[in-house]
Length: 108
Image (cartoon, rainbow, N blue to C red; front, side, top):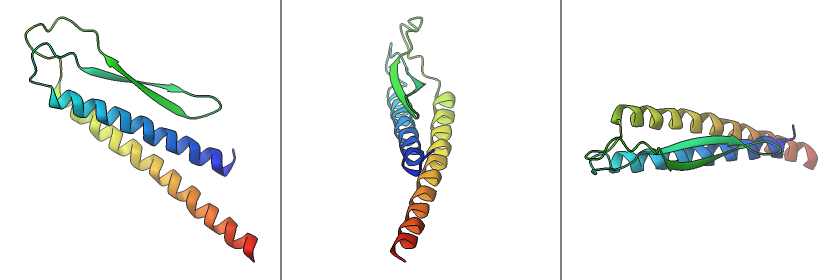
């Protein structure tokens, strides 16, 4: 895998996790809204490599008077998103450091 491909994969991961975190934040903000249907995030791989996230309502209509948001699950989702984002950011930073080293070798 090339350096630019590695950085592209980490960027797509950060963007997908940002989408997941935004959906969780929206769920928390609407947790007390009657009949609110929580948003779920699903991930899919992209060609040639990377990931994308899509958000859709859960489709669970059994909660007519309350929302179907579980705050504990949303906090766990937020924590998982943070950990995944940090991991992808580390890959990105490592790629940037390698790029700098390669450019300094090329100049010498």
